Length: 373
Image (cartoon, rainbow, N blue to C red; front, side):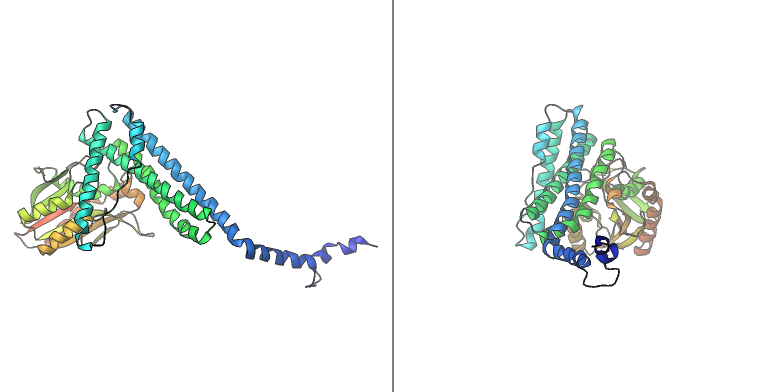
């Protein structure tokens, strides 16, 4: 018997167009059977591997920022700080009951102010003879580490829960959200060097524009870490408001606007802030719109909107678009170069929307680290 004919490649793989060839039948059918019964498990393994890499990166970012904070505090410490920092990372904030929507904003504001004041007091205890600038930088660094720690814990919890239950549909939303989480985490990690050095952030373009207009004017405090000055532009009175630089703070613009509206009776409010750009848009693009341009959880925005509505004051906004990473890391040249263009746009906006003798409140919104006035 000639075995070479039986086991020839042509016979095995059906080059003679014989559809009943058993080898070719197995090659096509076996993978289908495997994917029918084990496809979801295979996909879960592949997805789990990708998410595991993300969780490991989050852990690395958390540890890196923690070490940077501890290293920064080493020469300024008044005692053992490692345990105090680690314990602070586990602090949490419980949002108020939202069954009564008409009264929730004051509750949130009170809660956040209490947390902010407690954090500030704890930071002052971490170091010796800290200046307001140093204290604000440490407070921002602490927020970075705390946020990364929370992101790591949430992603890990969702992943382990899905893996424990062997539940692929539960892991799909995590897979879809992970790129956005990692983008934010990478931005937070990159922000550490700028915060330590006290350099302006991309988010500081609003305070930079207003601060430049305040340089030769008398600055007056109004609210915590917030200052204002008065000027004149083509027979219009200007009230310039920003957080007090060069500390790493956003101030309290809501409280300041409430006081200034009561005292100065402005006819128009203009707000300048950084805005997150969409994919495909160029960084540094300037856009003009309506409404209160201010981020955060919403308490200051609510306060400004409420005051403007009660006093029938229009709110105009200018935003300078940038990525999340650009907003919280060292300000790029293309964003900084927009300051003069934004100032020119402000003057045009004032001229077009007010009459001589009227008053305009101009607010530079954002973290004013490294930005004087």
